[in-house]
Length: 138
Image (cartoon, rainbow, N blue to C red; front, top):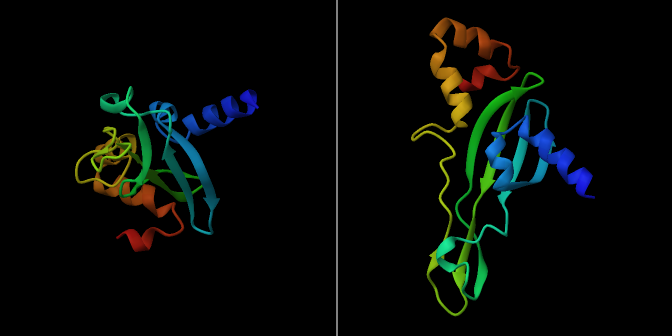
């Protein structure tokens, strides 16, 4: 089973930023007609430092974040990220981890956003025209 987990982690590292494979686990991967959708869930073992040595319990998830990433096989790729919430048993204060996953104001992975930023308008149009569902992005 460990070999299968390592294989999935390596494969996933080719699709999402490699450092994310240490933080998140793939909970679903879906190919639709015009897009791929991945859902990543924060690993349960990543308890925030403030409460690591206390009697903590899971307390659901924060609001999900959806980011666009590099296309796969000519299809748009969307990554939904679910960060966990923890609390100390018997208390109502929630604790979370903070990760620098995307640039402020940009709903794309950092790598994809920086790639797009480097393109001039004509090159960007040529790039996006290779996507089957580009028109809805304009």
